[in-house]
Length: 322
Image 1 (cartoon, rainbow, N blue to C red):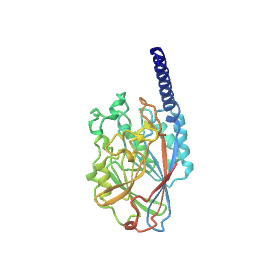
Image 2 (image 1 turned 120 degrees about the horizontal axis):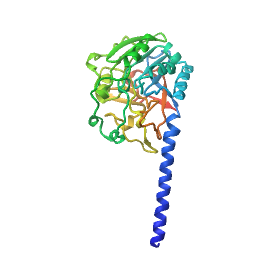
Image 3 (image 1 turned 90 degrees about the horizontal axis):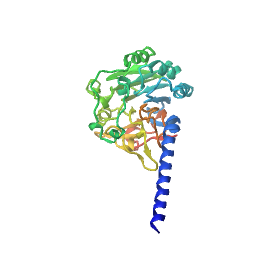
Image 4 (image 1 turned 30 degrees about the vertical axis):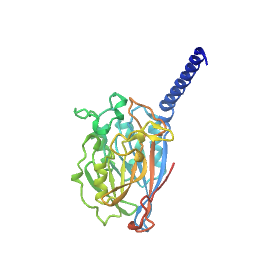
């Protein structure tokens, strides 16, 4: 091939690559980031013979006041008729987002619910180099200034609706006639977790004990699983946000491995295991409004009775579907 032919081929290849890249960016920023999905998961963690419980897991809305499509989509989730709502934080992206967020939750606030906060319930997002997300979580730096989002207004609204505040706290709810015990931590990603304040073996009198946190750091997961919680719910990861097709997520933005970046898996510690559900969440930072191969999502978990005694269960007795 002549030099001219090689140069022409190189230019054509570069043009194709540039065109494909531009199309991917347009899709990630204009389509997938608003292509909300509902994940359905079945988790056998209830006592034998118990009535199933439907749990709606919401996380990482990062809501801006003008995101009407997201507000409508979330409000329509009440039609699923869940028995319980679990919100794992990062609700806000703007100081004026509390009232739009409450409109999004709508009739869901009439249901039993629990919540914890993430960093973006305290601090509004700021522009940062996206490359920092590729750094290990313990190398990322967080600004020391005081909170600048109305998290107390949000807390008051949720608790006024009857939802339990699990930020480094415990609570008990009756759902479908069953006793559910909860323990939760404030956001481990910004080191607000105080697991020692909730530590201790689960009460065997509860029908089910559930651990709740925003960011699924191993120290918190180990605490929950070591204390005997059979189910742990978290968010924070955005499912990796920008995934590689046929490969998956590159990062989790915490010390969790990428195989557990979203969905239902198991976590083991000290000879015990728990079902771990990590929500890929419904939003992004307004400064990085893209998702690729990782649709924004909420999850409806159906908790069902264990088919066999816990000691005889397989290591991964869970199923899920889109």
